[in-house]
Length: 93
Image (tube, rainbow, N blue to C red; front, side, top):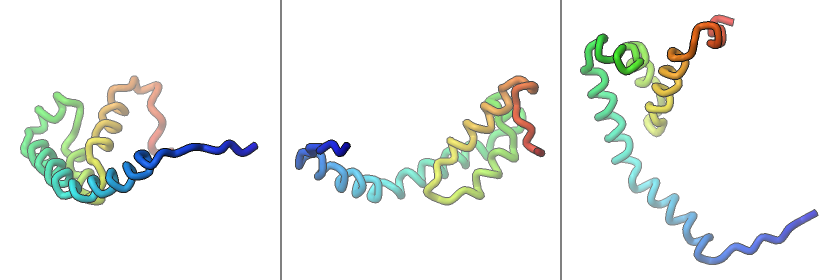
């Protein structure tokens, strides 16, 4: 069964504008992420541990592509550590 979808011109015009906006703001987003990572890199190991991260987490974000958001990796790492050991998947398997 095929359903006809009605799309208004304002909706179709919005998609290219949104894509253009993402392209134009990309340098600012990358710069902001780099500044944040620089601030995290200057933290001591104790400060990083206090927020649930390690020095290796910060170093691993440097391997990500420029357009990748490093916060997603850091959130996953922190979430993995806060789970009880019995619920963590075995990363060696």
